[in-house]
Length: 356
Length: 265
Ligand SMILES: Nc1ncnc2c1ncn2[C@@H]1O[C@H](COP(=O)(O)OP(=O)(O)OP(=O)(O)O)[C@@H](O)[C@H]1O
Ligand SMILES: [Mg+2]
Image (cartoon, rainbow over all chains, first blue to last red; front, top):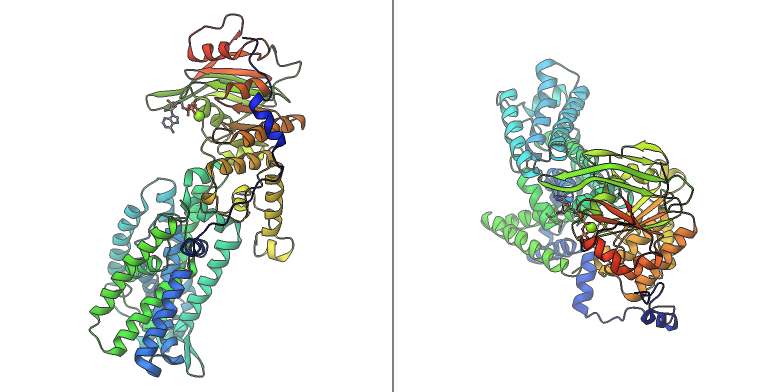
């Protein structure tokens, strides 16, 4: 019994003779593996390539009608709302959640901004703040239910979608506020509809808002501790918790910020439509999920970049405008977008294999 | 409180009557524990004996149903691992607690990120990536993990052993009062295991006590000052590795033999 060794075992002694500097990995990657790795590192690359290719494709097909500063900036204007709502969606999807109430929050916020101004005579800027506040608060409620009560995001936001949409119809009494009235009495509500022209390019403030939100979030997600924690929570919440991330407060913040962004989308929506309509933005929840998926953001959380989402929204915009200019049945757009969604998920799975 | 085998000092970390139930399963059953300053305490026991649950209770990852934990004599109630870390207790969990999609540097600094000095850090909360990468690289080199090519590599692209190395480096880099290692060499190669053992002895030389959970008896008997044998959710006994053989330890651990001379828990 006393023969049991204490200290390095005999067979371990030879280690000392081994070179101190361990051999580097041999580079045996094939070009395909390298591509897989690059895409894994830069998830926005695939949607960017698809976007550029589709712009070139429609440019060749339609010539200058499509390939002009005017048409290209028109696409930006058309996708602005989807892009803003998509930014809200991205944050939630990054945490492995899903936010089905984004469209409803957007329209309710816009209705509150309008109704507060016109029904109660509250100064428009304060109404805007109220609209943003309500959007933020609904997001906070979603986040609290997901983080504290541990309810599945799909269920929470599915319920919230119905509740908010119904509240929107009841509160607004299904009433639209006309564009002329807004223009006369509360032009600030249409602020994001203003445009600036640079040559043939026409940028509206809504498109600029989308780009600004995406830029800020891209910075936050990549270069701040909060952003890293959002990824960590989406990746593996238990590991994140053990590693010192306050998972609950990250989740609540994410849903709350996403509610605020939806509020901003509601404001931009008034600019886009001119009027306040309780029946608008119905498809934004689906559109935002489409942008997120085509943008290469994994629905399983923890992966992807918000730039990808914006490219995803733009791809949809390019196809919509391009096919309309070409004069096809608009159903072709949906057919193509549907294929793109499935292709994007297939590519996502393939890229994930780079890790395995 | 009497101190057998632990020298003349008071324990740095103690637990009394810790109980943790998961539904019908009792993972910890009125378990006692103590760790003395500067020592390496090994915790051994069968699979499912409750070792991981015990150290999770000590590190704030699990909140015990009953019992008391004291750090340097003061009762503590950790609500989260972050609280324990703030008190200088660092843990390598059996599951490693890494975010696969994030880089090595991001993982090492998770929850204690460094910010840029000046405006960029204060106002824009920008991470000080170069600094974090530099420190991470240093800590990994100390562990001899030179095969890691790129500090910005995602953790999921590392091998199981490399991941474990990163987790150990993280704990060793930041632990100031107690370091807890739950099977830190389970996935490591012969050479890397040896490095981790050397690192454990280094940490001990810095005066920081270590709790080491391991199923590797030669390793345990090589480095441990005392061995806490865990059985059925509680401490069966604590033995001095110089007075007992590995076979004795295994016999106690599996219930083949009952400890008589050893201090009963
Ligand atoms: N989160 C949990 N939920 C339910 N039961 C759990 C949980 N964690 C641990 N247990 C149970 O508690 C008991 C002790 O588990 P623990 O992980 O502490 O064992 P261990 O001694 O670390 O085992 P091993 O050597 O395999 O790591 C086991 O029966 C296990 O099934
Ligand atoms: Mg265990």
